[in-house]
Every structure is written in structure tokens, then in C-alpha cells.
Image (cartoon, rainbow, N blue to C red; front, side, top):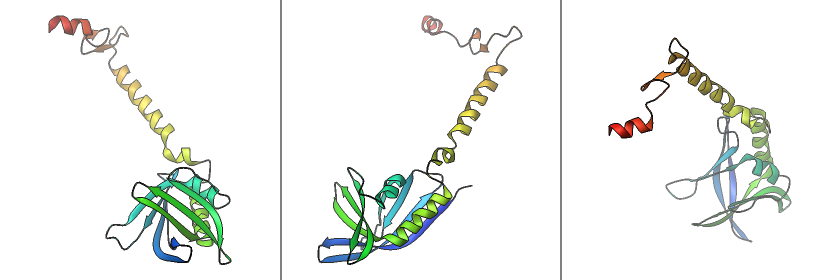
Length: 170
């Protein structure tokens, strides 16, 4: 079963120490993509701005400063209110956004109920997929064996036509 956890919050884009702009933001987590969180910023632009990064980064960032490169997350306090600061860097520019800590943490908690930390690999279905792939391969090979138990494929007994034979014919 696939689970999606979404929440709309308002983040504050810090323009200067004295000024910020409210940015409607959609947080989205999908159990079929269990390692990632998807954040969509609805700016004044006709096209929303989408960012995807590791859920683990956000989980750690609500407790302590973390991140390197394009995404950094840290807890902070603004005017006596707890916030989570999200610093984003791209070739198009940098942005510092602040989310109210309570709704962000509550949403994150819901994602952990959907897929607990450490259980992400189970949600990917890799083991089931690999088992099915191997079973399919065994079925195909077994069907191509002749009465002597030898593999029989396009080139007759012994498997595929050898590369030497095809070169000699060509």
C-alpha cells in the first residue's frame, strides 16, 4: 500500500534581517520514495519551485544543524518562536526559509508513522523484485533444457550460437 503524507504550511523567505516574505509551501512524502521529502514553494512565479532532499536530513535538522552542499537545515529561534531554518543553494541563487517548528515537526512525525526510520529499504520492494527476477530467469532457463539436461537456445545444444560461429558466417 502506498501512502502519501502532505501538509500545507507557510514558510518565511528571509530577504534581510528585518524583512521576510510569506511563501505558501507544500510538504509531501510518498512511501514509494521513502528516503525523500518533496517541498514545493508557491512563489509569485507562474511555476512553483520544487526541491527534493533526504528525509533523514530534515529529521536531524529539527534537532541540530546539519547538511552540506545545496541543503542545510537547523533549528532556530525567531522572536521567541521556534523555527526550522532551511538554507537552499542552487545555480539560480540562495534562499533562507524559516518554517514554524511545530507543524513541520508534526508532519515529519506523520511520515515516520507511514514509514519508520530504518524501514525505508523494505518499502522499496527490492528484495521482492530481485526474487521475482531470479525466479523468472530460472523458469526461462529450465524451459530451454533438452532431454539430456543441456541448454538449448538459438544456436542448438550448448547454448547460444558462439561469437566465433557468427563471425565465420558473416
